[in-house]
Image (cartoon, rainbow, N blue to C red; front, side, top):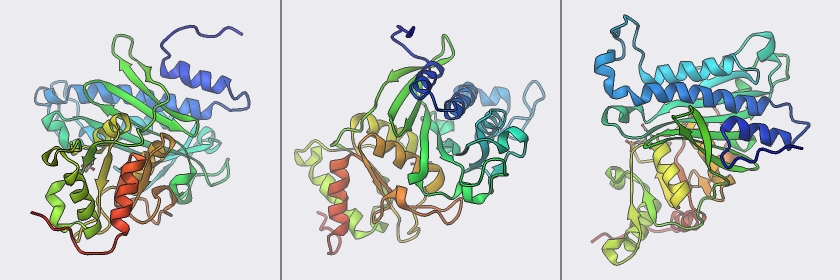
Length: 345
Ligand code: P6P
C-alpha cells in the first residue's frame, strides 16, 4: 500500500487518510468537513478585507461593482449553508443567524446521514476593530430516518450525541480545528496553496493552566460562587506573587482557542440580570464542550456537564465554564461551597 510520505497533510488528505482507516465508513463525514473547509476559505477572503469595507461599500449598500454588500455574518451564513447544501453529506442546517432550521429537500440531501449546526461568524462585533473572530460548527447523526426530510428533533439533540465539532479562527493566521471522538486536530491555512494544512496534530488541553478569562465588568452581578472563584484566581495572580493572569479578548473562539493550546479557563456565567447567560447552547457551548472534552478538559453550566443538557429550543442560552481539568475542579469547589461573597480588600 503506498502511503503519503509527506510531512504536511492538507485537510482533504487528512480526512481521506482517516477514511482509509475505516473501510466501512461511507466518507460522508469526511466530505462534510471538506465542505466546511471550502466555505471557511471563502469567508476568510471576505474577513481579511473587512477593513476595506469603506472601499467595497458597507453592509446594506452596493459596492463599486454595484453588487449588494452583505453583512459579513450573513455572507458567512450563506456560504456555509451553500457548501453543505451542495455537498452529499448534510440533510439540513441550523444557524445562530437564522430563526429556524432549514431542511434540504432534495433526493440526495434526504438520504444524507448528518445535520450541521453553526455560528457562522461569532464575535462579529469585533470585525471593526480587527480582533480575531470565528466560525463554530457541530455535526450530529440525524435523529430522523434517512430518506425523510429533517425536522426539528434533528437539531435538538444533546451535545453528547455530536459526531464532530470544530471552529475556524480568523486571526494572525486562519486555523480550522475539529474534533471527532478519535481526537482534536488543527489545520493552518497556507495562503500560497489555498489549503488548510495539518499544523497541530492530536491537540490536548493542558490539565492545568494559569489563564482565567471572564468579563470583569459583570463582577458584581455574578453568583457568589463565581465571585469566590475569581477571588481564588486573584490570590494566585501576579499581584499576589502568583502566576495566574487574566485574559479576555471578547471573542469566544479566540479565548477558548488560546486556552486549548496554553491551558486556562473561560467563563461566561449567568448574572442576576441574565441567569441563563449569553452564549447559545447549540451553536457555542456544545461544540466547544465536545472539543475540549475530547482534548482532556471539562465544560459545565455550573451544575451540569454541558454535553448532558437536553436542549429545549434552538436558540436557548446557557452559562458556560470550560477549560483545563484542574482549574475546572477548583471552580466547581468554589461553586459548590456554601457561604457569601468573598471579602475583597
Ligand atoms: P461580552 C461575542 O459577541 C460573544 O458571543 C462571544 O464570542 C464572546 O465571548 C462574548 O460574546 C463576549 O460577551 O458580554 O463579554 O461582551
